[in-house]
Every structure is written in C-alpha cells, then in structure tokens.
Length: 520
Image 1 (cartoon, rainbow, N blue to C red):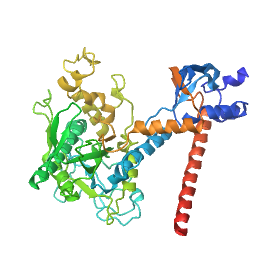
Image 2 (image 1 turned 180 degrees about the vertical axis):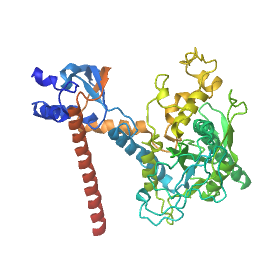
Image 3 (image 1 turned 90 degrees about the horizontal axis):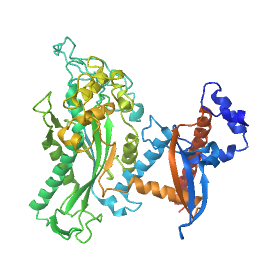
Image 4 (image 1 turned 60 degrees about the horizontal axis):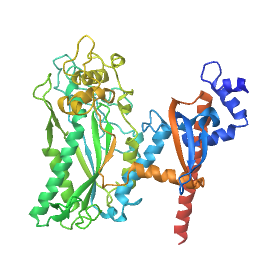
C-alpha cells in the first residue's frame, strides 16, 4: 500500500493515466470522490490541514472532533474561488452563475429584491474610452449574420484614407485591409511611436473615478429636473436623527468592465431609476410619475458629455492628464416590448464579462514585481510591452533609488499610495494594464450580494446533507493544487459530469413546465 501511495506524490515518474487508474483501483476511491466533491472541478484547489470540530448548535458543546490526517489525502480541499476563466474554469463558472443572479435580480426581482423593480425604468449604457491613437479595427456597417459571436459579415476597410500619407515616423496612416474577427492586428496601433501609451494607462487607472463623478452628475441632472417640474423633495430622517431633504429619485447601477483589444477598458452599466420612501429610505419603490425613462436617457448623455477628470500633477507631466469618455456612448432601453434587449440577455452578457480580465488583449499574468517586470515591459517593444512599461514607469515611487529601483517606503500601503502617490496604483496593477478596479460592481441597493448567494448555497448543502450541527475548523494553509495530475483528471471529470447532469435536469424541468403551459 505504501508503494501505491507513492504514486500520488507529484513527479514525472508516473504518467497521468496511470495515476488515475491506481487511484480508481483503491477501495477508498468513492469516499475520496465524495471528499473532494465541493472542489472537484477546481483547477488549483487550496489544501488545508488542521482540526475540524462539530459543535451542537443549541448547547455549544463540542460533540466530535477530527484531524485532517484522518481524511483522504490527509488534507481538506477547498476551491480556489478565482473568478477568471483563464485561471479556473470551474470557479469562474460558479462566479458567472452568481453574477447572473446578481444582475438579473436587480432587473426582475427575486431573492429578497421586490418584484416591483421589474417596472422601474432601466437603461443599458456603454461608456468607451477616447482615442489614444489610430488602431486597426473591424467595422461592419450592417450585420446580416445570425449571431455576433460567429459573425461572418464582410467588414468595411479598416482606415480607408486616400490622402492620409505617412506619420512623422514614416508609418502609413491608412489601412485598406478588411480584417477578420480573429486577425491579430486588431487593436494594434498603426504607429507604436505615435500612440499615447502613457495617457491610455492613466485613463485605465482613473476610469473608476470618472465613472463615480458621471453617476453623481446624472443624479444631479435628475434632481434638477424634479425642481423644474415642481416634484417635491422627500424629507428623510437619518439613523443619527438628522433631517435631510433628498431628491425623490435616485439611480441604482450594476456595472461590468470589459477590456478592449486595444487594452483600453470600457464599462457596460445598467442604470435603474428608483424612488425614495420617506418612511423607509432603504426600500425599493417606483420613481414619481413626473420622471420617465426619457429623462433617464437624457441624464446619462448629459453626464457623459460634461464630466471630465484632470489627474493630479505628475513629475513627467505637471499639468496632469485629461480623463474623459469617448465619443461612443450608447444608451439603450431594456424591458420594452419593442426592443430585442431583454433582461435575460443583458444579465447573461454582463455575467460573461465578469469572468474576463485582460485575455482579449493577449496578455495574462499575475502581479508583476522587480524580478518579473523585465519579462513583460519594454519601452521599444510591442503595444502591450509599452503599456506595461508605461504603468511601471509612471507608477514609480518618488525618490526612487535608481540603483535598486526601489524606494524606502515602497512596501507601505494606505493613504500614502492614494493621496501623496496617486499614480502608485499603476505599478501595482501593471499586470492589468493600469486598471485596478473590480470587473463587476454595483450599488448597494441595486440587488442581492454575492455573500448572500454563497451563504444560501452553503445552507442548502447543509440541509441536503441533513447536517444539524455547526462545523468549526482550525485550519492552516498546506499547499495548493491536486497531489497528482491523475487526481486532477478524475476530480475535474466527475465535476463535469455533475454539471452536465444538472443542466439536463434543468432542461427537463423547463420542458415539463412548457408542456404544462400548453396543456393549460
């Protein structure tokens, strides 16, 4: 048996298929499958070691205690929880499902959100970055394809300029090619030296502040409309007992960031118009009848046109950079009978991008350090290398020691980075090309939280297993990843089979519901 256990140790001596066969041949195989069920599909689960105690929920007494040495593999497996599909397909699949519920509940209600939100005015807005230089693009004036995901329409010429000539670096300023959807030139600058890489990474870094001010401006625009139309403000008493007069409308949003091929981030935002209940300010109530979806659209367009952010002075640019939205600000209505954009499609669209990061640009790495930056950054390299170099250069600490490339306070965090060093985040998020925000954010009142969904799922699993006691673990990190490639193959295969069975079951239930509706 000891020789068999040696096969489970990582190493090149035994192949993956052999490891899987030996594992499946052990008497404890089905117990092992049940043990790793919660983390079965994870690409790189976390291994924990320690003590697990079972506590009576009523009395608080410890009714049982067990060490992880008594468990299969002498460890407890926990899914990594990484939302990025490029890192872990299984955990990204779980996160995408939660993101779908978070977005859709804010549109239709459910899971604690009142169903009445389905009647609130909602728009789906897309905010893009401005131009930082000419790039190769694919533009289809009119789509005739069945689906955009597999578009085979004939695009227009990239940049057809007859009298464009050449730039100061000798590169042509025109491109007459009709790029395919998978053309690697898409998003690449026509001239790397003309392209403003510094401005783009600064825009990525300050885009979150630009969005915050944009939403504030939209709220102010709606409040001004209420004043002009004589809609009274609402008297609200705060938790501290103070009386405030607030506008009778407010915006709740759900936002997803998407990285374009040119490595500039842009936002897809759901903006829902809510009212204010003076007796319960936290309640979700419809807006007053004097404010409509037309006013919401006008507020979004006005805010996008007016709001800009001037960044703080930088040693390399004392006047700072201007951060503003691009010309393409698209605002569309949803939940209308005449529009093909439904709540289900929007929720699925946003949930898909919630599991993405910089993969669309061709770059994917972990956080960069002094030891790894030279592998990715190059001021004379390609587009991505220059962007990463711009992040690293602009985010350098003040008073950097040129010999070592470090500063005495480089490891300090907190107000020093955000106030006295407003560009420090560019270096920290160089692997994200300057964007340091979360890819899915929402207003507090928009919908349910990820935490609530996870707690509900955990409670369901405990009830499914008929667990009445509380489990308390005193665990420590023991490593990450499966012990062997064979274990990873078996665990991921079993998890894929369970997902397939769940999908088939959902389809059968939907079909039965459809048949019941037809019969009625």
